[in-house]
Length: 72
Image (cartoon, rainbow, N blue to C red; front, side, top):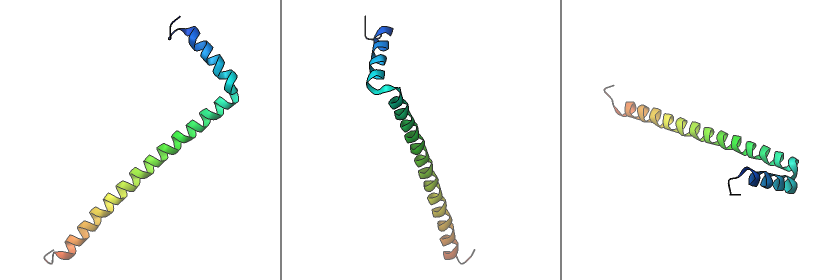
């Protein structure tokens, strides 16, 4: 009976279910899912902020170069 045998994992699963109960496990998994969604949303918001900052710097750079160049 090695570490990777099916009976080992069945026993571990039964012990975990007895300790935590199925209700707590589903609550924990729901919290993990909410955390992942929140993390993805935060990363997307950060990317959007970085893109808008880069775009505004480019626009400001073009506007200042046109103002300084009297020929154009």
